Length: 292
Length: 338
Image 1 (tube, chains in turn purple, green):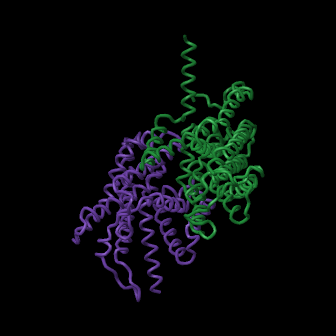
Image 2 (tube, helix red, strand yellow):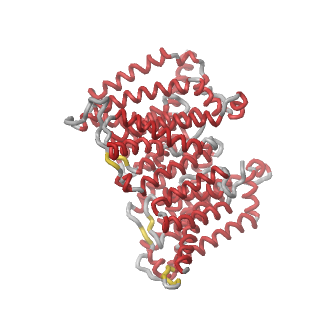
Image 3 (cartoon, helix red, strand yellow):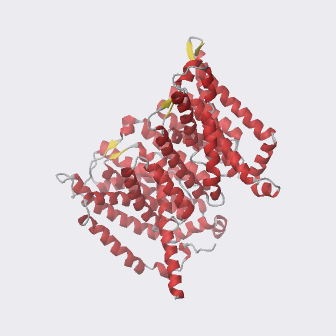
């Protein structure tokens, strides 16, 4: 029973981080109809920024204020996103999809090496924060408290995003642009501004995912490329462009992965990819996507 | 549409005689190359030619059918791993058997994947091909007692045509002479076969599907079946490329199944220009040089290639061959006016 609780926590932990990455990816696709292959790199960027803020600039510090540095990665990734969208992506909205995918693939390659250049080839970590939270007892097992913080942040981010999209004026504009960009533009919406904002929010979420994961793992080169494919599975299962889909997709992938790691570790990844393929076969638009 | 797609040009400019006029001298030059340059250069070109076969196959989907696959690393990997498994479990030595085995294996895998993938187009096709290719990657990665995991599997130099044996000969010598000519021969056969395919009624039907799916269906083309056939041919070509590549490399690792390699295949096609028959060939060979020299020159080669890719899609979307053709057409017009 206690073991089950721990497995549940692990599944939720994984799901929160995946939701942050895939939710951003899905938001960007929903608004701009662009699949950003560099999205995983923004997740990695968030991880590296927070890791270097906590682990390098303030190394040795034990202060509880360090927790305030956690969002640094998210803000950094958001800034990069705000620069990337108008400069590199905007010229591609009217071009065929293959060019959009290729330009984001190019950005992926560039960002990968920018991180190698800035932080070097070695893993970076911010374990101070992880250690500070200590651990707690779940029955006869010990579980790190920090993981619960990650789950809470993932949940909160989901709630905030839901409120932003369904309960604010900005959300109405965002949804209107997503449904019909030309008509929204005709009604006076500054589409370019909405695009920058949506892309920045998407990048912020990815960066936040990286920032909150880095105290318990390390930031390593290549983590973005791995994360992207997993978040593809999430959005394929949930439906590309749907936020609810990203949430449920992340939960499904989180649970299956946790079961997979304990029961069939060899084919855990293969099972995830196969589930994505099966969902696409049965429901092409994903479980929550609207059929086109 | 201001520019006329290459495929719609009158047939006279593509007569077999004209092709031979260009193709034969190039083939002879390529065949004589090992006697003029050092072995390193020859082997490098050998790599380029194997990639060219892969991208040629890939482009049947992108350029002629209008489907962007982001999972062609899977079929390249199927080719490479089939050879490695044949060496490990069947102790095969003959390159011809490797190629036959690879064709059989890639027909099975592409038929399976294609059956699923051709139901979709556009971005969903890309994501689905990517997801399926990652199934193979994770299997190769996790089942290390079969596939060697990240260490990969070693593949010794094979026997060619049953008598050209690498035994005794220096490996470099073998790869830069005998094996290079073998790759070149297979490459030429592949180019000719692909040429026939894209200019056959079947190829024309694919282009019709690419340009206007609704109208193609109205004319009576069975779209899904044609896409499936194109997928099959495409995957088999890429598989053959993988089989030819692995003796050159001497080793196959899960890296060639990982999705960034699929991205490189797309990169090659766009670099050369995917709306031309020759574009993928040029793109693959140039990309191979570009990457090899960038890797030797800087640790930040990936950023360099990324910048090349971004500049390419922004400034030269028709790729090298497309740009050369545009320039040639411009020069002709200029000359005509004079």
